[in-house]
Amino acid sequence: MTATPVALNRLSRRTFLQQAGLALAGAALPAYAAGSAPLASFFVVGDTHFLADKTEPGRMNPNSAAYTHRLVDTLNRLPGTEISGEAGGGKVAVPNGVLHVGDIIDTGDKTGPTPAAMQRTEWAAYLAEFGTRLRHPVMEITGNHDAPHGTGFMVEHLAARQRARKNLQAISPNGLHYSWDWGGVHFAALGLIVGTDASVNRKRRYAAMDSLAFLKEDLAANTTKDQPLVLMHHVDMARYTVAKPDTDYTKWEWDPADVQAFHSVIKDRRVAIFYGHTHVRNVFRWDGHSTKADRGVAVFNVDNAAHFSGPAQAFFHVEVSGDGLLVREYETTDGWQTGHWTPQTWKAEL
Image (cartoon, rainbow, N blue to C red; front, side, top):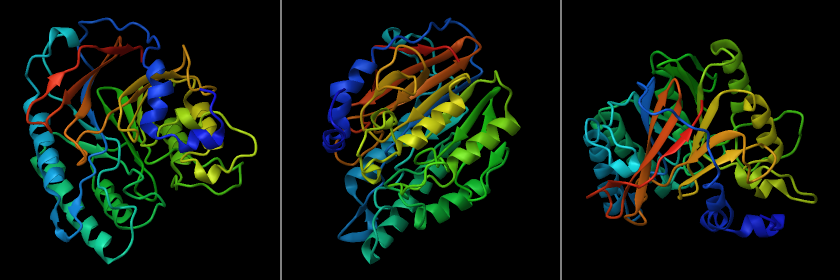
């Protein structure tokens, strides 16, 4: 994409991906040998945006409550069911868990008495659905609607929640970043963005909360060089990969210096990345140099899973085997009253 930095920032996330990212979705991913027993399987959801009623902050918005409730019903129902032939066939294995790639609630980026009350309602609803009703463990991170500046209600509650987890490989001092293993695959939860590159001293729009330092330390201490890695963060990196001259990077959600530092850490590893934020599905290769590449890290951008604004939603189902990564998508057009597999698969070596 050749838009200037100003024009790039003015594009909506959806418009950008329609113009550039959907071309990336066609980028070839290496072959995966079907039929291998999975080392791990999991769902990936994002952008649930639990929303309270602004006029009655102690009550959930009806659309948000219905969509999130039925999403959990769907995640609970799918294991053991048949996968359509167009999506590769087979049955959904009982998952190791669910990755939530951020924007858990909708109001964490706002201040004042009413948003504060809404945040409490939204978090309680999330815990009721994903912490109690969901039959699988959920591993979540912050998004820009949760804690864009690394402070506030969601930071405090998520840090306490992560510190209470068992069987982690590592957890950051602030409690927001953590890692664990499922089936020999190493997972790391890296929050809103991955940063900060200390060699570049300038203001950032969003707080990385030392996620880059955590990733470096975790990989050095808890992985082998050839171990498969699955990383999750919230914001997309494609729009922020290429630095531009004479640009105010405080208007960019992810500073390109931090994007480059992140890529340098993982470029030689066996890694797949999952993120959300864009409210549209996108699958591509990332080489750390451009927004479109034929080779590089396999990247999977999941659609919104239960956003209150409309009934069209989707999430990923992922299997990891010794041969690679197999990703499928399950979607709804009626707010999870019904759902179906979309007619494709994405495969990558890992």
